Structure formats: structure tokens, C-alpha cells
Amino acid sequence: MKIYDIAVVGAGPAGCMAAIRGAQLGKKVIILERNNKIGRKLLLTANGRCNLTNTAKMEVFLEKFGKRGSFYRDAFNQFSNHDLKIFFKKNGLELKEEAEGRIFPVTEKSKSVVDVLLNVLEEYKVNLAYNYRLEHLQKVSKIFKLTSTKKELITAQKVVIATGGVTYGFTGSTGDGLSIAELLGHHITDLKPGGVPLCVREEWVHDLKGVTLENVGLSIGYGGKKIYLSRGNLLLTHFGVSGPVILDSSNRIIELMDEHGDLKIYIDFIPELNSEALGVRLMEDFQKHSKKSLRTYLKNHLPNSMIDPLLNIISIDPAKKLNQITKKERILLQEALKSLPLTLNGHLPMDKAMVTCGGVSKKEINPQTMESKLVGGLFFAGEIIAGCGGRGGYNLQQAFSTGYVAGNSASKI
Image (tube, rainbow, N blue to C red; front, side, top):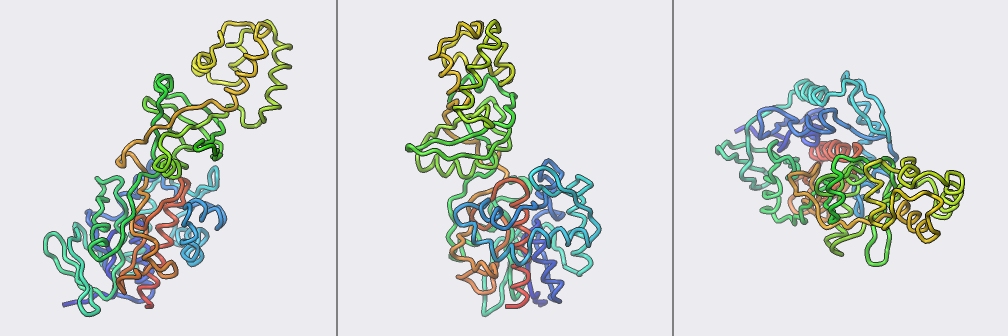
């Protein structure tokens, strides 16, 4: 029976890069893919545009992966965002930079990225076994035996598991790799949704579904502490809040909710001014435009649909003229514009999330090689590794980098 040097389970970005790197180093590589084509989930990223990576510096990348983000330092050093851009350009795909350093193919099509990966796999003669769903993996005297649900047997010296998490289950990410890793003795951390909208208790928010609050400041309050999030666009929905600033921070917020229960989120509608400066501006404006109604004046600061709900919360009549507003009311308005509280009381389920936070514990993986510390010759790459990063190309870079390191290490160890 033919024994492959490396068998890679999963043909997403991590699996493809692991296979490519192994084949570049002269190894006989096979990819075992559950679907009938590669990169099915990759085709969906960034609404089909594929945010490949980000131009951010190393420290920002590590920060994006939270408490144990430093685990990826070696992987990002061995195969950086710069290396990834060179890889695609060298293989005929031009890239462009958009807001916040996000990198996309100029074609704006994920299919262009998948086509490059497929071409390079073919160039290096990587074998592709489609419709292969791994059911059993065992190591028998230094050789791995991989058996599919149809009892197809593959043998290999090394194995890279790159089966992803449990989001977008219809693409094949149903946790098969996690189950196999667990059977081999690995600890699987709690699986939580990342990049997911959050639920809000206040019903007036639900009534404003579809309203976007542009470039607002946000902070989270719990146990007498406040954490400031980045500025961004906040989308109000029929269940709560979404938009870039929420999706970027949701994994961190969900961790806090698990620990502290319901949280307060505070909206700062005028983040460019501190509270004192806003107070001065309101006093000046109220004198200057004394005959204007409060509702008309607030159109400069808020979307129309937001004005009445906000004034209702602080019990001020929107029809009042500015010269009729008392000092107490002006201070209440100032506080509401700088720190309007909402109650976060949940999140949408895993099937609405962009990524899975949780997976094979990083403590059981060598960060320099991606090799399991429990099973020699077994490697992990991509989303199957516990933890997840913020939006903006960081998770895809993690997949490509860990895939590269796993393929490189599996070829050399």
C-alpha cells in the first residue's frame, strides 16, 4: 500500500497551504476533503470578496487573538502577511488595500483566491481526494491510518488536521476534526461564536432595526470597570446590535458575559469631544440657536429616527425650544450623548457566527511547529486551534500561517 509522507485533512486555506508547503519541500502529499471541491468556506468570506490578510504590524495581529495571542508569534514570523501577499502575487493574483489595512484580491472575488490555491496544488502534484469524510485516525508503529466513512484507507507518515471549526456547517465544518482530536486525547476548549451579533434588552432598539449609528464610540461596563472598544459603525437590529465594531469585539464581550452575566454597553455619539467640551458646545449652541426646537437641533448629532427614543429615555420633550431647556436637562442630554446605556443580554447562536472561538487547546500544540505535544507526527492548523481573532483578515492570515508552519514542520521533523 502507498504510504504518503503527509496527509492533510481539510482543503480550506490552512490545509491547502500545509499541502503546498509540504509538496514544495519534495514530499508526497494528499489532501482529504469532505466536499467535492476545495475552499468551500473560503468562497463565502467577506461576502464573497475574501479579505485575505491585513497590513497591520505583528503586535496588532497578536492583540487581535486575545489573551493567548502570543502563541502565534512564531507562525506569523515564519509566514507573515508580507509573505502571503508575495505568494499570491507570484502566482498571478494582484491584491489591493482597503480601509483599516484590509487586503483583498483586485478581482473582489474569493474564487480568484481558490483558483490560485488549486493551480499551485496541481503544479506541485498534490493528490486531492474529494468526498472523503474522515471517520477514524490511529497511529500504528509510526504510521497513521486514516479511514473514511466509506471505509477508504489512507496511510501516511505525518498528518495535518485542518478541518476548521463548527461555523457554516453546510460547508462541511461540523466539528469532525475536533472529535478526532478529542479521541486522540486532546482537550477541546468550550466552543463559542466569534464575529456574531449581540442581543439587547431595550425594546426601543428593536424598533429601530436597520438604523446605522456612524462612527460612534463604544465601551463595555461590568463590575465597576469600563473597557473601551474601537470606534465604528453600530447597526441596530430587531434583536440588538451588530455592525463592524460589534463583530470585531464579540468574542471578548461574550467571554465577559459568561463571567459576569448581562453587561452594559455605552454609546458615545460624539467621540471626538470629551464630556466637558461637549458641555461647553451645548451651552454655546443653545444660546446661539435659542429659538430652534431640541429635535431640530439634534439632527446635527443623531439620525432622525434616534432623536425621539433618546429624548424619551431622559424624559425631555423634543418640541421644547433650546431656550426652554433647563440646566439639569442640558446635563442629562450631555450624558446621554456621551454615554447612552444599553443592556447586553445574549448573542446569536453559533450558526450565525463568522468563526469558532474554541478548539484544540493551545497548551497541547507546539507553537514553533504546530505539532501535537501528545501525538508525535500529528499537526494542527487553522480554525481548529482554540481561540479566534477579530475581523479584518486576521483569521485568514492565521490559517495560512499555521498551515505553512504545519506543512513545513511535517516535512522536516
